Every structure is written in C-alpha cells, then in structure tokens.
Length: 180
Image (tube, rainbow, N blue to C red):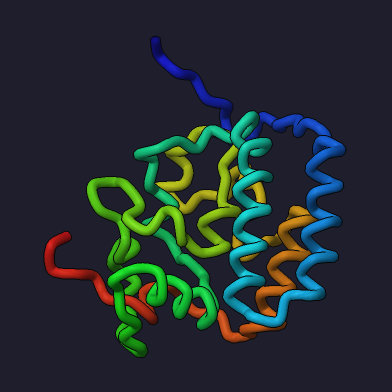
C-alpha cells in the first residue's frame, strides 16, 4: 500500500483535545507545584507528553524510522542534558558543537535514547509530508521549537525553562560517537 501525504499548503484540521487529556494536563501542572526535585519534575512532564502524544499520533504523520527532524537543530536545556547523562551511558562534553552532524543519538535512523529524549523531540510533529522536514522548508508542524504554538506545550516548556533557562543545541552537550 502506498501512503499519500498532504501537500504543505493543505490545511490540516486538528481534532479537539480530549477532555481527559485536558484534565490530565491540569492535574500534572498542579502536581508539579509540589515536586521539589527538578529531575522528578522533568519526568512528570515527560510522562504527560507520552500520554499527549498518543492523541497527537492520531493526526501526525511522524513514524518510527522517519528521522529528518534529527538532522535539524534540537534545542535542549542543561537540565535535559544532565537527565540524558544520568539515564544513559552518554557523558556531557560541553562546547563541542558541530551543526553539520545528525543528532549524536541517531543510529540507523532510530533514536538510541528514545525513552529519555528531550522535550523538543517529544513535541516535534509534522502534519504534512515528512519530506519537507528534510528540506527545512516551511510546512505544517505541530508543537515544534520548544513548545511554540501549542498552549499545553508552551506551558510545559515555560516550566522547564524556569528550572533551566539556557537552551542550546543537543550537539553542544554531546559528541557524535565513533560507532555511528
């Protein structure tokens, strides 16, 4: 079966956010007020995003193996870099930025740190043909660039930026390993 995608000029009608997700969002925001540990706050946000992404998957065309977004800028905070380091074998190596590389965690068109991927990766979705992601052309994105455009994402991004305000490309923190 050949899959057809929308042209980037075709407007995508988005479904309304389900009431249960809106309630889960409000509950998550409330719970974040009582969590003192920043890593636990980040995990709580990531847990909500995992739930929210099940909804986004109903209209996004992103799929496993599509990795064009991993070749573009990937914005993360120092907190997220530390979270990746704490939960994987990868070590932070500051000030080693080469924007000509793919994400250092992209292996065989798959994310090798998928379960601990940063906020910007969890909120980057395309609504039209994924080929546009490879060209850096303007096209229909949902929630890209550290939460811009989706109110729930924006609130979560603001919380993360309050905890860890400095945002850099993931390649600033992590080097490409030799086996890639």
